[in-house]
Length: 264
Ligand code: MG
Image (cartoon, rainbow, N blue to C red; front, side):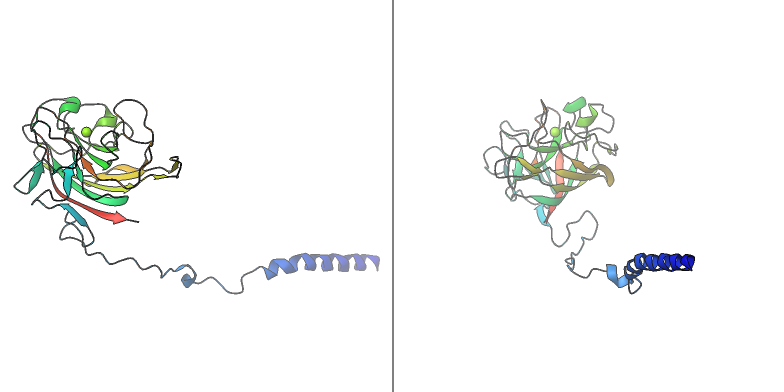
């Protein structure tokens, strides 16, 4: 009799523990609809005729006709570079220097095409040196440079070759075309964000496709790209995009088909 009572007690206790477990089971099997999202709806963007052509929501920064979107980075006077045959070329005139966009940007997608002249001379960093500064934070600041250089057959420090984030990130590949051929950069830039006191809230990130090849994959920048010394961040808000006139003696490099899509 006592054994029966113990067994009954055990059953009651087991049932008491098991009941909540059964109660936690979902009442119905999950459906595909449970994980479907309908809002927000992505905006319609009409692509260009080719992947290089500006899509419908792009701001065209250079379409081969004029430098209306650009100014001298030094004093904001009219951009001193040369426009010819649908391209813009770094000016070798004394006093001519970097140019930057009149507009300021924060986060964006950027398309740039550039060409090292076929007749390029020099070696190392002095062979077709230019740069796309993803944020031009002022004439006295280093800014954030994606290097432009002829590295088709030209050795230099690898964190300073074409496709590098200058002195911070070695490109993941070397897809340089020969001098004289056009090359493309397709860039996704996430600007750094700063607190009111100037401290860094979130760093900059960059992804770069060089001639369609991934060379920077969501790289987290260490700060401005400095020629000498360790990088550090310095507070800025939105900033122009700048193109570098490096001042080398050989034939200067050219750009064409530059457009940008602002991102939230
Ligand atoms: Mg450079």
